Image (tube, rainbow, N blue to C red; front, side):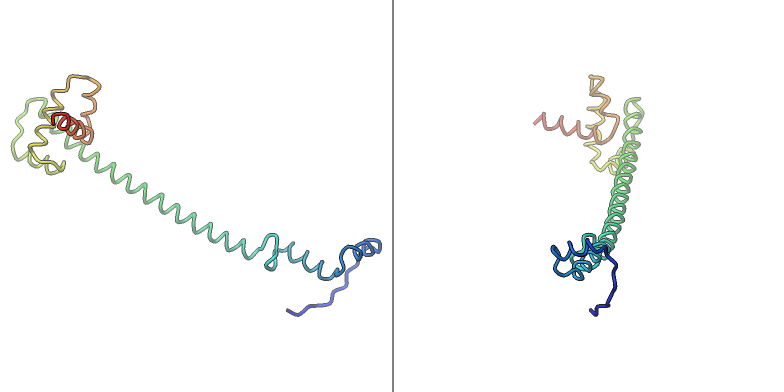
Length: 158
């Protein structure tokens, strides 16, 4: 790159002392200026690199936000699905506890929605109804925990 002649005014004593320590004052001043304004490869704070890094950080922050929102949506969707299953379970369990007539069609529909056979659903209802311990009985308020208790029971029977 072409260089341009420049006239600087420096205190005379400072110039004399500088020549003893710095043999090429022009080169020294050029390097100091480049470092100060973030110019070139040896800059202390390269402006062009900082802008690139800020762009990367901005992109990363947007990606992180999108990932977090996606995880939140997946979590909310799962909570909604669990809530739907809990409503089905609570309805059928309450009917069972009140000795209401559970038609085969109703039991079949509920078992399909809960993802188990009607035989398994009948067993889960029976186990839930016959739990005597109050704290353990509270675990039967939700479908997933009720089904997990059923599986524990089946494993202990084997």
